[in-house]
Image (cartoon, rainbow, N blue to C red):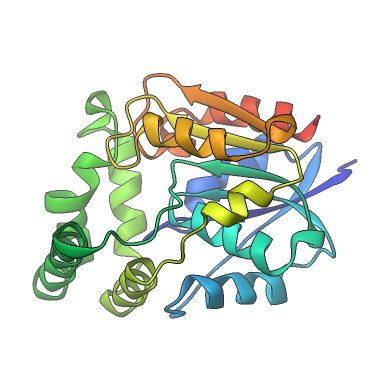
Length: 240
C-alpha cells in the first residue's frame, strides 16, 4: 500500500509522459500527481496553480527542467507543504543581463516563430529535441516519444512557457534556504543544463540536505532516457 505522496512537475513542452516510468515504478510506495500548467505564463503563477491543484496537504516534490524551476517557486511560496525535493536537469539563475540575455530571448523566439510556421513536431524534430538527448538516442523510438509529446502542445502554450522562462526569478535564495532532503539529479551528458551547473546548485544547498547524483549516458531528458536509473534514485530519495 502506498504510503508516500509525490507531485511531479514536467518541463518545457512536456507532459505526464516524462514521468510515466517513475509513476509506475514507484507506485507500490507512493501515490502521485503530475501537474499541468495549461496556458499559465509565469513561474510563480505555475507554482500557485500546482499548489491549488495538488491533492495532498504535503508531498514530496520532483521537478524536471522548467519543472525544477516551478518546484523552487513552490518552495518559495509554501515551504511547509514540501517534505522532500528533487531537482532534475534544471537551473536556478535568472535571465542573464545584457547581450547574453538578449541572445537567449532571440533564440527562444526563433523557435516559437518556427513552430508557428511549421508545426510543433517539426520544430521539435529539427531545432529542439536533437540537443535534448544523448546522441545514442537520436532517431530511436524514445526520440519519437519525445516528438509526440511536443506535438501535443500548442504554439500558444509554447509562447506562455517561453514568457515564463524569460521572466524567471532568481532562485538562489530558495536553494540557500532549503531545509528538506534535496536531490540534485542530472544527465551526465546534459548539454542544455550541464552537470557542472548542478554541482553549483548542490553547493548552494545547506550541506545536511543536499545530494548530487549523475545519471550516466543521459542527456537532458533523463527520466525518459534512463528511466530505471532515475526511478532507482527517486526510490532512494523517498527513504530520506
